Length: 66
Image (cartoon, rainbow, N blue to C red; front, side, top):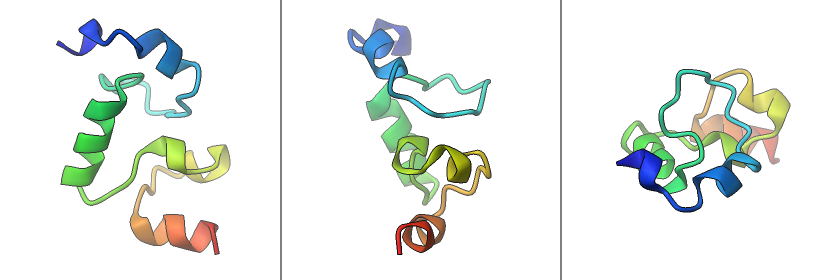
């Protein structure tokens, strides 16, 4: 179960995901698998400003880091 993640509380201090109903917050492995399946990237790879657009595409990541 996701709530069994031993590092969840520590991970939450570094998680900038602004999608409130997300059940994967602080559970990095679940988050990475979810975004990989959907062809995107997790919030933590984006600046806070870029993350709030909810565009987690690889293209957005590359453009914002060019």
